Every structure is written in C-alpha cells, then in structure tokens.
Amino acid sequence: MEHPAVDRVRAALRAAGAEGEVRVLDDQVRTAALAAAALGCEVGAIANSLVFDADGAPVLVLTSGAHRVDTALLAATHGLPELRRAAPDFVREHTGSAIGGVAPVGHPEPLRTFVDVALEQYPVVWAAAGHPRTVFPTAYKELLRITGGTATVVAAAG
Image (tube, rainbow, N blue to C red; front, top):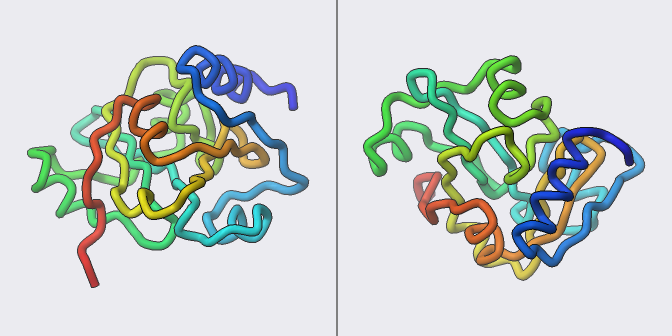
C-alpha cells in the first residue's frame, strides 16, 4: 500500500531494526476487535495506539485491546496533567495519521509513550502501521525499544 504515513512507519521500523513487516489487510480495522478477527489472534494482543492531550502535549499510550486506559491512574502514576482524549486534528498533527491507523512509530516528532505491561504476555503483538488497513507484528520488548516507551500499568486490575 502506497500511503505517506505507512511509508514513514516502514522507514521508522527499518531504522529501528524492527523485525516485523507491514501487512496490508483486506478491510479497515479501526478497533482492536476487528483487528483481532482479521489477524486470528486474541484481542489482548492488539496494541491500540491512543493519543491523549495533556495540557496541549501529546501522550501516546500503547494499550492492550483487552481493556481501556484508566487515564486518572496513568496521570497519577507518572505525574501527568489530566489526560483528555485527543481531538482528531490533534492526533493527525502529532502522529501524521488519522485515528484508527496511528502507529507506535513514524511520527513527525517523538512522542512521550507509555506501553501497557499487559502486552508482555503475548509472544506476538500487532500494532497499526499508519493506516486503518495496515498492521505490523512485534514483540513487547521490541515495542518498548522502538518507541522509547515506558512500561506501565494502564488499567486498574479487576
């Protein structure tokens, strides 16, 4: 698939020495459930890329598709201001992609990134690759390395 955001993700993955190749799916997979169904994996193995607005600064959270981010917990744990779900224009400005295709890498500028420790239980983790029809496989440790992310709990147990 030829798309500027996908090209940026491919280049970022190569530059980081990542092992997975971008895969183009038949249909858009804007949710973890759709991605898991298309890939034949557990929904928890999908790394959702969620962008939050922390007083005008973007914060990227890579969370397991099995649960929702507890923004109050994340903010309190890491001394962040209140995290608000980012508007579509804010997401595109800071990631170069539309919601549904935001990748963990390939952004115009590095983003402060948090990676859900729940992803560690999956040998293969799938992340978006710049477009709602593209994904790439990775591993939890590689995801931490290529994003420079901080491993953290993003959802309260329960």
